[in-house]
Length: 302
Image (tube, rainbow, N blue to C red; front, side):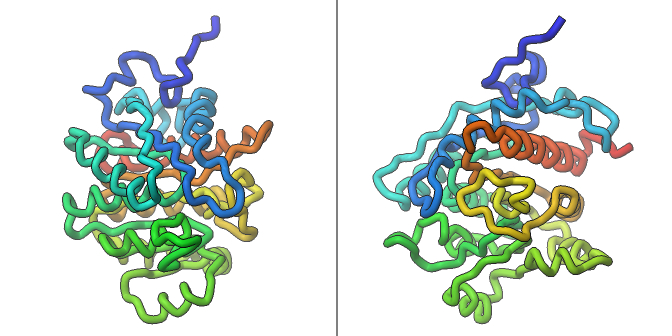
């Protein structure tokens, strides 16, 4: 007999595996869609990922177990930031996250536009003075202002590097202002999507491992970092992105080399009838959870 899985639980987990008090990971949906500049709809991303997650198999072949029930995943109520301005939205996210009694739990934010990452990094940076942000993205997001606000999704990294330096992977789109900024800052290191593609020996993974070197990490995954053949349902689907297995290798390396204290998955812009992107996003979040929990000793590779 088929088993009903509650759509408001990530991965459709049963009661024992999704209790707030005993779960090692908390999922926080943030349906923010305030400064998107091409295709809107990112406010629908969190619910689409959660719904799709109910169709993801819990068995992870890398670990040889149904992983999530081992460590537990609990859903938090969706956070609806104030929409008075982008700046106030960011500040309200920081305030809400600071109010969470996380302990050593892993916080996973589902977006929503990328601007929300600024509020999250601002909340975690004081807790981890040596924090490093690892950003998977098509865009550097290093404009100082866009469409009249310094808190646009196009300015995300420019704002969060005020709290922690960044390692960016998959970048393949800049404006002249961002290129000039990269030339004069030591707060950002970039591996372009083309460099990753052409590095057949995968030296970039060793470089990434050395750059992280045991530091606390906030991981932000903008889904347009993936190639649009895998992830078409994003606001700005730039061609030439990271492949699925290369993305998993990056995330596995980050989890093993550092201490991921929180991560987000943002910028899903659901396409009617295009369920593949939401499913891939849900699967990517689950794989990331498993890599982090393995790094914390709660899972073992086969």
